[in-house]
Picture (spheres, rainbow, N blue to C red):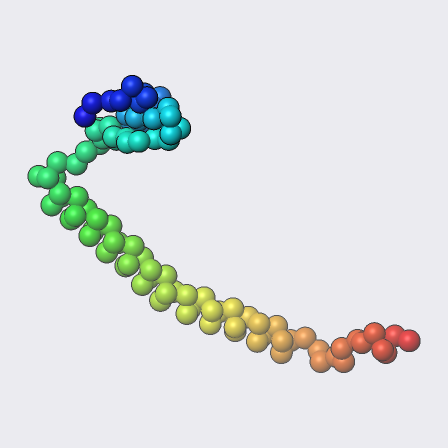
Length: 100
């Protein structure tokens, strides 16, 4: 595409994208992104999908294990709190009204 006399073509120093700027409008007229270096080949798609499925399954199994042990941990905490409550003597709570 040909550039008008009022257009400048610049390359972004950060991402090397090509920007076409119209000086009269003071706006970006069009841009084109650079080719990605980490572009995935279509032949590798099956391997990548299998790896992602395995990763999701591992995360799911870990969450199932955490949920199973969570109930045990809560039961232990409850038993400890119950034992502590039965060991402490029953006292009347102190109120600000009683201090006067």
